[in-house]
Amino acid sequence: AKTNGAIFSFEILPKIPFDVKLDESNTIFTLIPKIKFKQAAHYEVKVYKTDTQSNLETGQITKTSPRELVFNSFFSTIEPAGIQSIFPGGTNVSSRQPVTIRFKEEMDMKSVKNNFTIEPKIEGVLSSIDDIIFVFTPQKYDYDTTYTIKLGKNAKSLEGAYLPEDVESSFTTIGKVE
Image (cartoon, rainbow, N blue to C red; front, side):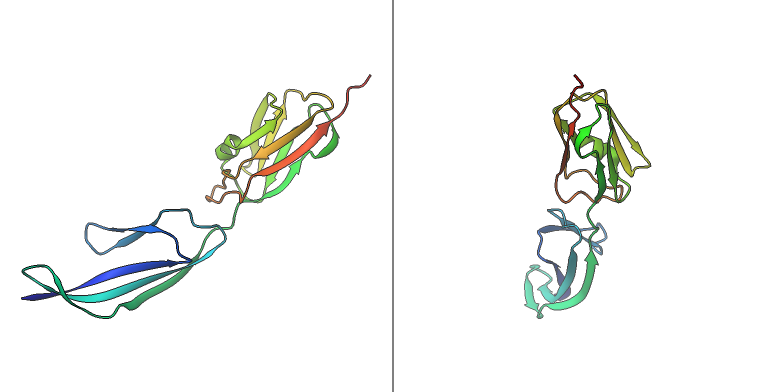
């Protein structure tokens, strides 16, 4: 006795490694990428079917048809998160000037806070306005000192987009009045 069946195979282009999971009803396949998709990228998904005939007693496949493309689709990934402006910059910055980072979209402020550093380290308060503006208010900067602000690339938007790379900016405070 013989039984008919099918084998499905999948392809994501540009190629990325992925696992395939089949649900309990054996009708829904889920493709699970092993690496992050690139942001602002275009992908193609192809599904192939190979008809089979198997020996019912042994379960061995005895006949296969040529592989056939049965589904083809395209999708694009989200644009990366972006920064509109960082203030202050340059020289002669006052000793209590807040650092303000304005983003192009609403951000996950917890991830922004976790990825923000200022060197040399200084105590201050981290806050945000409407998930678009991040503010670091220092207790007081040292005079005539260059500070470097860094926002790590793992800071992400509320939609899940992240910065394409670490962002750095620096400024120098005013000198002490003699």
